[in-house]
Image 1 (tube, one colour):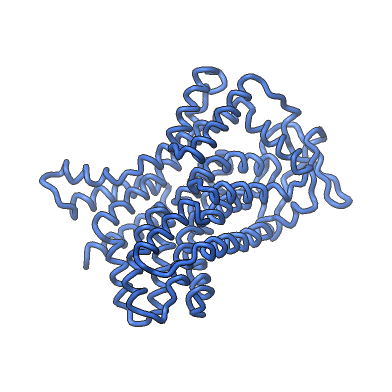
Image 2 (cartoon, rainbow, N blue to C red):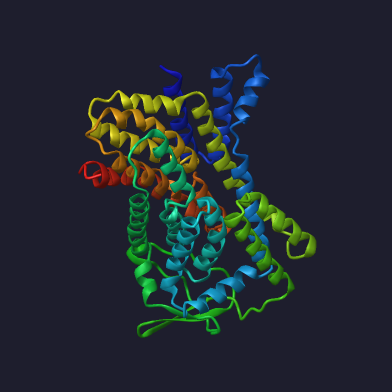
Length: 456
């Protein structure tokens, strides 16, 4: 049995163990990477092999997860998040059903104008998940619309994903269509989001309005459409929700003003947004910098913020990414691509390429996967004229990005990390199911739409 196949089987085994036993999957992945690395990696001694394994540790992802959740823990603690929630509800006229779509539109715009997808999710997810808990919107609905919105704008000609994909295509001398790639990604993510909206309780939201200034008696949590219950909100005062003839109450903060700490936090969030979007500053480093300054200026409001960082999620995601990085180092990803190239049926090979893109991207950087898998597909595309290059690249790009909803991918991990602790397990498990289903559903669907007809 080859080393590449053994490494894939080990990944499957640790998933099974983490499913049936109460152990963090990230911890298992780190152990697996260490043991596999010292066996298969070349090196003069054990220390050198261990260093080679640790070279794949996602330091940038670690800093993003810690920095963003640290900063928004401060924002939540001093009331800034509640102020933003209240202001946004007023901006949409109290229409609860519009809130998830506002989050979708904002993240789509941010990535379309050049923001990195994880940066956009990092900025919007804490606010959106705050809305979800406060107004009993199913957090899965909110989280997926934020993630899908980021992916929807991610392939515009001036975006990061679009630039990488179009650049690799041009360098390989393949025909490309940047506008079609962007529109295909946008409408595909929009269609998925419409399904998500109604599947996870959106129908019930359409008739609801909220008056943030109302203070009625508390009411129990409601169930979303199709029996998918939205977790209860957090304690606080309540607002009146109207839906047809019935009147229901939901908890919202009392009228909140801007004090010194909240104003400083808003300035810090604005600096984070501008720095990440327009100056390409690392969102994790910038978030920690802003959080540190806010802590110095107002230590009381940030006293418990570090303890609210989602450390189990950080361990889980970083451990998985470390293992996948080892797979890339030992050549497992390249081996998979080469095996696909030996398949005699072109349409089947194209489907497998899309499936590989979705499966690997669900655990690793979509940016890296786009730069790695498209070149692997080049020999296949240039050697078989029956498969349209534009269609396959479009299908591969969408397949590799929509699965960012997996909690092991950066966007999914940020969504889980920014979910209140009492709902975090609920969101993690459902995002894992949804993300894994997308690994199969999206490649198959995009293959049927963009590859099989041969119109691209």
